[in-house]
Length: 276
Length: 334
Image (tube, rainbow over all chains, first blue to last red; front, side, top):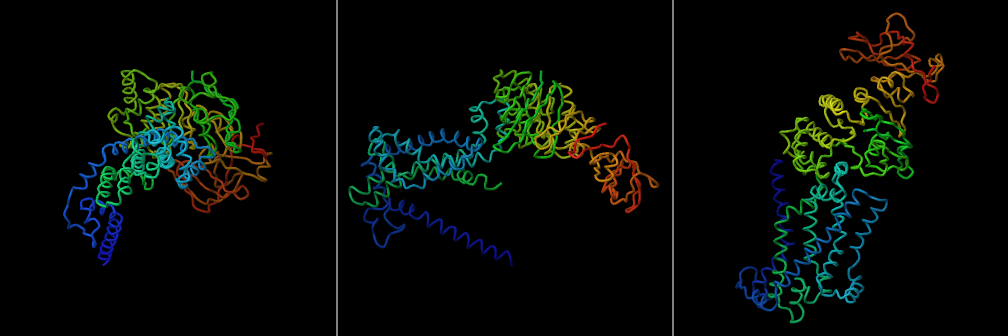
């Protein structure tokens, strides 16, 4: 008796999980499907789900009109660059907060997080002016700096929680063994925190790749990443749903693939320390 | 060589004073045990010597040199931690050789030293394993290997055996004592287990609330405790402490008599008592008796003592073995 109930329950729970999953995934799926339709079919009512004339025409047009590779290259540079510099700053910071906390460490962590609660548009004007006056508009260096600062609080928080899980005695042992601070970080802490650092790194790449507000506001051409690439299909020439979808699909494909392969690492990293 | 001295070493976190000021001289090659109940500051004191905790004031001299502000690695000391604190991502070989690598020794020399340490500790066949693939005792050996391979002036042990089971603990205790004999290095050993302290130490330092209560050889502490605290802490089972009129007869606030210094008689004696419980250990029997005005007492009877509950007996203390303490808990000596 008990077994049949639990089987039925399992089925229901599974069905609900799938339904929610599909609901969340649907916009992405619809975008991908639309990218293979003609402009006419894209706005057809009632919408056609799978039975339409599949075409690659949109991709051809998109590639012809704008240089996808240039935008993609920028996206890669911005995501990797900002992640690299953020980690260089975040690892020692999180180390200090986890292993040599001061009286205000908790406040500092909260304050860092609070900067993420402010609407970014509030800082748009000053940052835009700084960028203009220092000639940083539409430069990769400028955007990398902004993206790095933007994600730094989350990175430090994540690394801080991972580092907290590492017994301090192991680091002390390395100090007794004669390791300098730098060697202690390099040979002992970092290798032990690799799972945590890897998932932090992946998350930061994803966040930086998807970041649209600042990249749209501060780039035009030279440093423009894929967010600009998508945006360029929305306003100037009216809405072409199929082409916009093709551009979007091309923009999100790399990060989707990365996310797919990294999901095990991401889940492990994000639940690190939650279960012993 | 490996002398260590504390000169009014003090440690405080804000208003919380952990060590009010400790003075201690440890001779070269001595095996010193810090013992005390948990929270007495013995680990903090050890960590101050190691350099892992800063001193609030005072000084630490190692080998005659002022090391108060030196980094841990510059002090020429090795430490074995309670949790072993092995590097989980390194093999046994990596763990043992880490300190040598940090010191920048040539590869061949490192390998020779690691091989030698591994051979002494029976770890040779485990050199390529990771710590998680080892048993508790083996991990302990790796931690010790990591300490001895650097050939330090002194060793610091922070409750190294408390995570091992009882049988292994006795074995490792003997091994550490043997190691001390072979190496002749200064060793400081922290434990809360007074049996470990008694069996291993050349000298015992008894700590209570951050204060050094008494320093002496195991038998000095056993025979001549300076205070009530030391009297109660050293010796197993604990010393019987008697207050009130019975103590007054000896001109003291409290008198103490160890369970093994009471003679038992069925017919006559100083204190009449009733047996409440008996613990049979085979070689000895510990009787827990109600001695009326003297309160509950523990008595050791040799061999198998046939004890019936509520049986009446008489206890007579060996006069020379009675310890007297004043109202501040300090020993009164004639």
